[in-house]
Amino acid sequence: QVQLVESGGGLVQPGGSLRLSCAASGFSFSNYIMSWYRQAPGKERELVAVITEAGGSTNYADSVKGRFTISRDNAKKTVYLEMYTLKPEDTAVYYCNAYRDPINAWGQGTQVTVSS
Image (cartoon, rainbow, N blue to C red; front, top):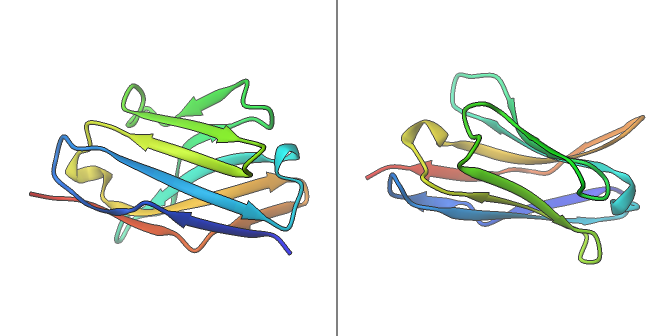
C-alpha cells in the first residue's frame, strides 16, 4: 500500500525558511518521480517542484525558482522541499506526490503559513 507522510510545515515569518519532508512506504520509491504540489485557499492545486527517479533532474514553478530546492534520499525513501525567502503568497497546504504510471499517489498534506 502506497503511503506518503508529509511533515515540517508550520508558521514562519516572511523571509524565513522551512524544510518539508515526505516519508514514503509501501512501494519502490527509487522508481517513482516525486513532486511537491501546493493548494492555497480558493485556488487550484499547483505543481511546485518535481524530481526524477534518481534525482538527476529537477524542475520548478517560476514562482519558486531560486528560492525552493527539491531533493531526495532514495536510501531513506524520503523527498524534501527546502524553502527559503518565504513570502505570504507561499501560504498553502503542501502535498507530496509519487508518480509511476498508473500509480499517482498523494500524501495528506502539511500546512505552511507565512505571516508576520
